[in-house]
Length: 407
Ligand SMILES: [Zn+2]
Ligand SMILES: [Zn+2]
Image (tube, rainbow, N blue to C red; front, side):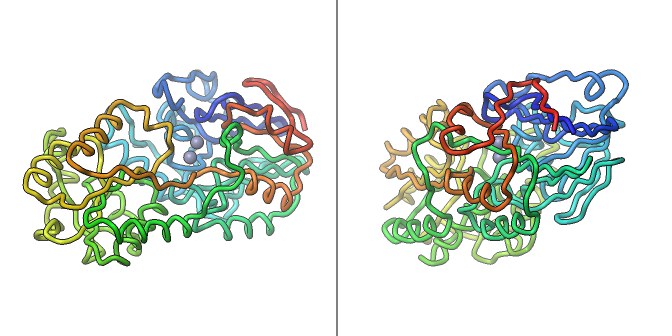
């Protein structure tokens, strides 16, 4: 078996991994865009251009740095993707400028059910990550076993299940995994449950809690929904968040399924193209609950909602004791739109707070994974500091982009 990291050995995001069996069966895992320069195409002969020579593409999760370029793949190459992952990708694409939903035919994977591509057997398992229904792949062929984890952590709500899956899988020959947090100081991150308890204290102190988080981080949304319930607040989602939650299973808090959840469709959404209005605004309008703001509330917000927050909440005297909780990676705080949003909210007397835990593996999690599956070799991708892996792990293979490892 041969493994080539086409992209991702020296950067976070833009992940593309190629695995080839001795007989020449060739698969790709993830076809993601770069996090900074998003839509730069990656041309690969036989995959995106020319006569197809790849047998299949497998997607680990809905984050753009793993799925973002998938629409460029040749039509005749099957793409394997989990159902909710595809749904979230397509809904998100409809709301984003320049993003392309997947309109071509795809093959839907289910956790635990193997897929056979010629002489390769590929089995997806659910992992714990900040994208809903993320998965890892176990690839078996030529008498060898490889795990590609995609992005993962084990301090979220699915952490225990993830480790149990690894125990079932057992030892492997090669682990291809993420090293996002190399170079960051923390060795151990707080758990999603610990975060929930911290949220309780904050929610008790403020009457209006605004939340700036990723709408597709469903674990986090549930954390804040629980804190909201605990302090008897109304939970309000923006249109994008409400669209995502209402398309997932019924236990996920959405205005359609939960009586104490409302949707706030701000003016900026009405300025969007008419197709979006027809598809997403009209169906959601009936779920706006009356006067949720005349009650203590927790609301998911976006920088694009600033004018509405100012006009309809602040100027009407509805932000009496308010905070904004920033619940994303610190790096995004450098973005101008986010900085401006927070500065303007602070001018309205809203207190800025941070409450977050990473969607990525801390060093403790990486060690646990290594101890369970005892890989003979490890390749770290999705990192800017792969050299730091040598301080913690043995059997590291340091590949550069495009370099091949023969197993
Ligand atoms: Zn990623
Ligand atoms: Zn991710």
